[in-house]
Length: 332
Ligand code: ATP
Ligand code: FE
Image (cartoon, rainbow, N blue to C red; front, side):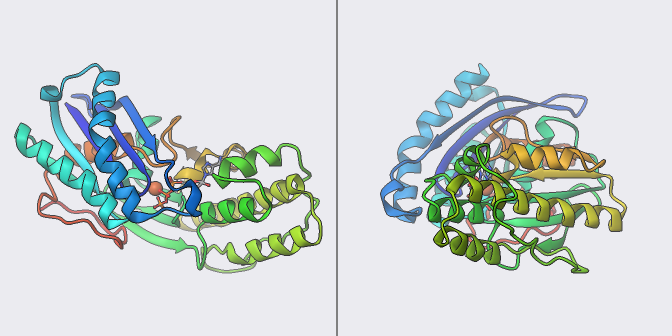
């Protein structure tokens, strides 16, 4: 069965096609993302502009995704679209488009949680077999979930303040490295000394599994004002951020007896982070290429998993929600 996935939660218009094979395995057939550039002059995403851009682009991105997959719209077997969390106006575009498509084609519709999409992005590389721990490190989240069974998400730790991706973006901005901050920090870090700025790992010694990045951001600002080279600042910040994410996740995995860890979300594209996690001795799964930051294929992968689990038709009556904690996912 071919599952179409749509994500318009923020400033990327993403549509992807995934094939759910009769044996339950999945393969990504296409993944097309239009990243909006209209926000560049505003220093942040302008919600109303984001919604309008989604409206203007979604048909073209959908056409490209179908063409890349080599399928016609009539061949689709189900549609999944993100219903939250995200910018409500932006979410509504993809959600309504997906619902309309499913009704026109008379095929099931599945409303998908954006973070479940981020987690299932790793299903492009290997089968996600619970139990496992999932660390979502993105622009708005640094959340650690214990996934005891399929569709059951228990939040075991999160950031107290800034998200990891947000911290990469802010440190890049304050040190003049530009936007998007994550890739800019990663590039500059290659030329810097990770020991040049002596950052302290946040919340060292804690018993829980929380994260904190706002203190690092302030420390980075002070180091910048004191004349630290942007490359050294980038390398030192990246090193401490990675260390914090790895240490806390590994401790949680050991305490909870989990030996598989999914690391996903935009920050999971970071090479230094990947290398550090791969050295932990845990079985670590990452999303495939192009599936770390927001995209439609990850939503199709989550939809395909829901269909496989018998909860594929869900959410036709759901609206878009800005705030939606990822709790246990159930069918109608
Ligand atoms: P959320 O999913 O929490 O709503 P989002 O969808 O905006 O947030 P993503 O698209 O998953 O977030 O990720 C974007 C974030 O990932 C940005 O903060 C960006 O700086 C970061 N990022 C992207 N590439 C890298 C990289 N190579 N290294 C570090 N961070 C990165
Ligand atoms: Fe996201």
